[in-house]
Length: 53
Image (tube, rainbow, N blue to C red; front, side, top):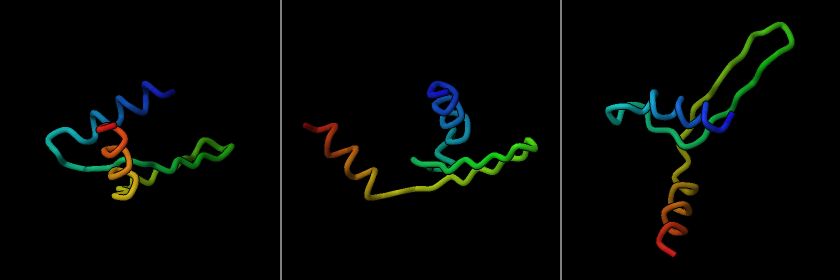
């Protein structure tokens, strides 16, 4: 599933459109689902800080 999420991120952020670095996925037993895409600047800052180390 990790590769699917990375592919979804690639597709939905093409052209610097919808920036997101987190998502909440909810599904129910009747097949309905909902996704919320979020931008977490604190998380992004931490990722960038760790990438420098």
